Amino acid sequence: MPQRCAFWSARRTLILADLHLGKTNALRARGSRLPASLPQRLLDRQLDHLDQAIRLTRAERVLIVGDLLHAGIGLDAPLVDAVARRFARWRARIELIPGNHDRAIDAVAQRWGIRVLPTALVDGPFAFAHNPVDAPPGVFTWAGHVHPVLAMHSGADSARLPCFHLSDGLGLLPAFSTFTGGSPVRPAAADRVFAIVDNRVRQLLGPATDPPPQA
Image (tube, rainbow, N blue to C red; front, side, top):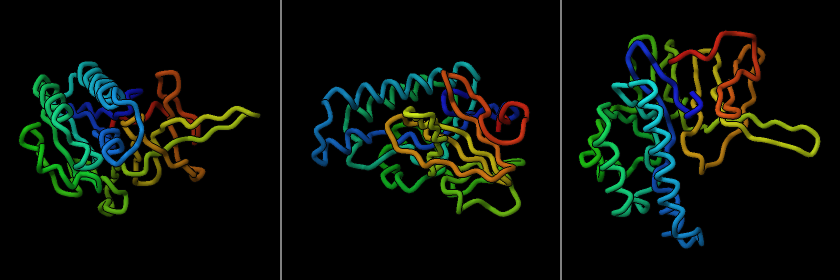
């Protein structure tokens, strides 16, 4: 999905990773001179995108594959309250596979109504893990952590497009956050890379195929 999510229709599950909520708050708390209005603007944008994805898919479950949070220092009262209000509006249940940035999740899990899952989850034909190294053997795994982007160059122009990178046994999700870095993919010949371009998901690398699987 162009909202940087995957939708598993058989389970009515929206799958995403790496929201890094509170990142700008954390940076400001550590002395960064970011504009004071930026944290709320970015938070509203992220929650609006997630709201849109839930409404479009009518998802009954939102599965966050790690790094819902950025750092405990970024959990100020306005952010905690804003997320609690938005999450309470959604009928979808929210589940989290904790990532390396989610060390403070216990401080907000109950307030936000989040069910915290194990580090790796096997559900039907798929597994889900924040870090690809935690993927269980023999099961196609959806993971986050890497923030895959497709780096493209044409003359003096360049672009870094968030993408879904599908390889043998592994699907890497793009970072849901737009305020984060990315790791350029280096796909093998048989891999498929679906980039988000002009609010559409397009296959730009790999063997011709149907649209990316809906998890």
